Image 1 (tube, rainbow, N blue to C red):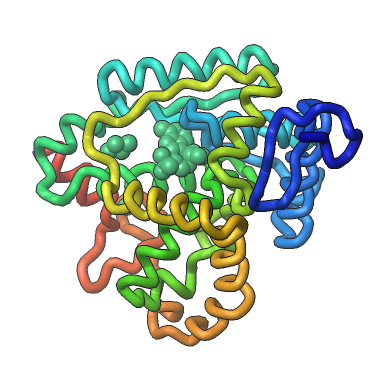
Image 2 (cartoon, protein in one colour; image 1 turned 120 degrees about the vertical axis):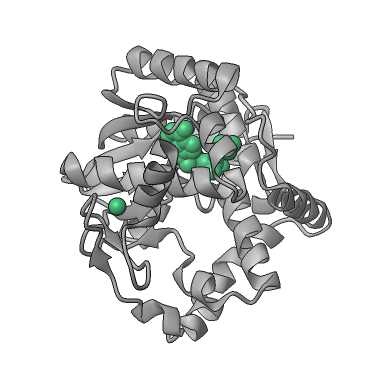
Length: 301
Ligand code: AMP
Ligand code: FES
Ligand code: ZN
């Protein structure tokens, strides 16, 4: 198999793009995909200050590396969830990466906040992944707003987005379908949020890390992580084998043709008010505080 660009021996075959690349040309291809996503979705410019949420996994390391290489102004944010060995390794990988590439890094320690995830799991009856997700989103936003960053970047990739879209579609969840997408604009108290990897598969970010020499960790969370999402990803990978390009097409067509139908969903006009305790906006009906402050209160009780 030959590289589509330079005709040298190809190292990576990409059936979904009907193409293949040698290592050098793959790096060019990857960079162009990201640049196109940033441009088409008007995500940010070189004047923006980007806060990139880095978990230590391949996706967030790949996007941080790529954005830094393209000359964007990036700062990393790592949330140390306090989940034993898994969090220790994730933090080490993130710190090692940021120091190797000279990327400033901020760290929030959940344990210091009284929010170490294993302790939260013991006290709060809701499924821990959903509580953990709520806390993560809160800190992503808080650090972005308080640090004056214009945009928050996450490493969500095409497989994550397709699994989420499939889950939202199975439930015909209008509120989620109207808000799902690679860009969430800023609103009062909320930073702009973007996913520049939304056209890129897990396989493609893994290749990027391998070919660019980025050492990423695999630190699975011991609390079962959304088993349904994992099975949806497996389903879509089977479909992709039969019909290369299906995943990208499903998501792209949703953005172009599906999502507009949900824009008038009632949820879009939810009323926000500042939480009396932390000041961040919340739509919690009737008596505030916000969900995160209630978790904090429960943890202190
Ligand atoms: P996940 O929900 O684990 O698939 O992660 C999706 C994205 O959220 C990652 O690519 C990161 O950008 C961000 N993220 C997840 N966990 C963390 C963490 N502990 N610290 C910083 N960012 C995170
Ligand atoms: Fe949050 Fe597992 S519960 S990463
Ligand atoms: Zn609050």
